Length: 452
Image (cartoon, rainbow, N blue to C red):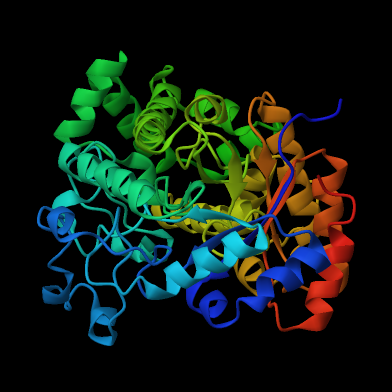
């Protein structure tokens, strides 16, 4: 069936680079069919917006320069990745980018962060687990997130979105960090259990006390697993929800996973409504999402996301925290280490094999040890293709799908990524590319020939 959605080829680019090299827009439009850019500054972690003085006065993160003990990079002038906009940034480069895009016929999607980072800098707004504890810093590389139920932060973030859509000539938003920390952060799966989230559970019709009991009981059960039980579980070839169902006493754990995702979808719907009320219904609003295999664990309930957003994109296609080809492998490494750490006597290779089965990738050529996951090589093309197939299968077609694609990989891999997007009938892609690398640009154009 032919899609009726708008086909887009979206460049996830650096604001400062495009401001200095506006000719790159026409170059990529001609070479790869560029339609849209989503610029981000590595200094401020937004597209380069500047908050008005009125907005900044009530910004909850304005004191970041006084928190260098928690955010040492602040000494270099690098802003912390938190929700919304922090004042003081020079928006002249972004304004040049917007003007260049208008003259080239390219859409501009604004970019700001939401919840999955920043808790280490602002612990007063951070996620808490179901026993009230802050997240374990051993998992910090995957994010120490902000609570998505903090009314003050969410209202301020909404007002940032509204101000941006009114002050800047952009065509919509592709927000980032609209999630919990990556599920490789084992501890984050037990968050957030703060009073605000408990109130949200009541409002949304969930039994918070039952969910808390169920998740804590599951944690205890996992810590008591034996080698024979792991083998028995693996022999049954369980999917992830089967695994939870076998080990949990009731449906409370599944309710917990769903509840966490329900909160985020509610917030996204509220943000979209505010943006479109202020800027018009033609201003699109969406975000990147975790790949399908790990999406629900990270807070992305695709059905609810389709109701709350205008499109779905993804993070890096072959690595990184939101990696679409490495989401499962990063998770598997951390989950295996955690299980072996807490349940004495487990064999790492057998636990890892169980995790591969739970996520439906046991048929791929994957490592048998956690060290092997780190060292590689990994079957990136096969993992990515499976995620794109699952994305297509788990969505209804009501919003366009723009999976991520990185042109920085080996040429044969870039072509394989593009083929996966095309074969599964997606509506385009969000890509990264070095616009000055002629070979990268050429190969990207070849890879996208059948896309959208």
